[in-house]
Image 1 (cartoon, rainbow, N blue to C red):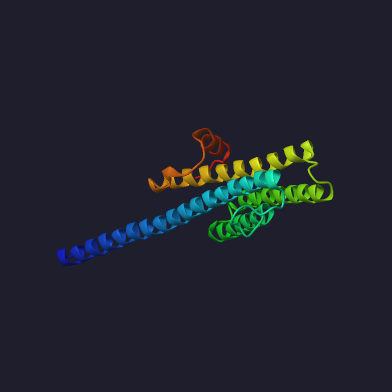
Image 2 (image 1 turned 90 degrees about the vertical axis):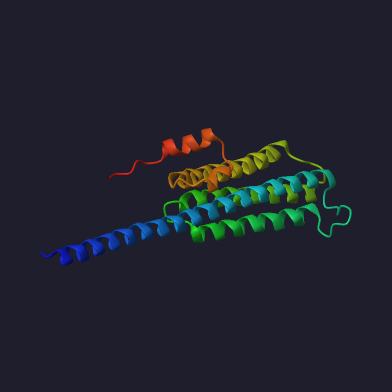
Length: 192
């Protein structure tokens, strides 16, 4: 081979390797962006659940009365907030890969259980005013907390994924370090 042929071959090899590295970098950025987007969605769902809990307390205090300048009572606000939270889980489902759908479905199930329990409490209260059953109230609180715990675990999961990419974008996500470690420890090991 002549020097000219070797030089062209070297240029082609360098060009292909740089193109491969750039392609991998772009793919990683897109994946990291999707993970960051899901983190934001999980945080929004958690905020909606916290606002639902606030409306739950308002219902316990005021019943179906409208407060101040509000147009909706606390149950209507609660239903709106919960519907928004459920629509956010649908939005997150579009971005997630099949590997994480089960955890999102678990969040969805818990939110729906919370919805059933709260609606049951409202129905019970309307039939017999101010007769909050402590068992149902405890069940309601347990369902709401279980939903929030699952959301925080998922946030921790996405945080680990982003950290794996070396990103600092996701470090502000919610989820305690112990939850993140617990999630990472319970994940199946990859086979190389």
